[in-house]
Length: 147
Image 1 (tube, one colour):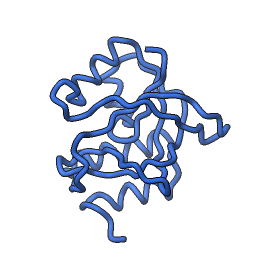
Image 2 (tube, one colour; image 1 turned 180 degrees about the horizontal axis):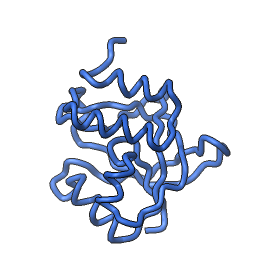
Image 3 (cartoon, rainbow, N blue to C red; image 1 turned 135 degrees about the vertical axis):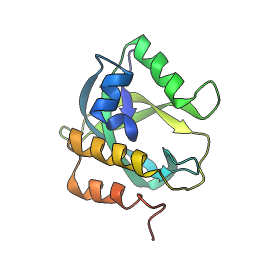
Image 4 (cartoon, rainbow, N blue to C red; image 1 turned 60 degrees about the vertical axis):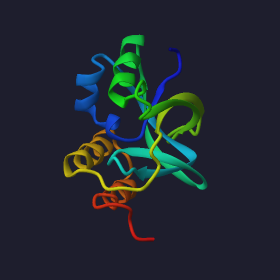
């Protein structure tokens, strides 16, 4: 698989990815326009189409073995997540890059477990996402933030 992987949930976490995909390389911070961040009813990150939104994350260079491991983790065979092609933009250079991400079948808002929320937020902190975005992720800790 030649396209990089766009991670915007728990797979931003460096320790988690080191265990799940040993040897994978994080290759930059990116944003995607038109995707609204969501914790779904199952308690996991996904995104909804929303032309007014953007979601931040990172890109990973993966091997075929890594893609297989992620497909298993994301529950692709069970229909929980699917791979989607997307275009992301590097935060530093504004360069557009074609990539692949996972989106969940379940798009009903929900609440993450404390453990999962910690993994996502810590991952975003580890990779260096902006403080205001960390605050946004924190606002999802107990379910959808008040609008």
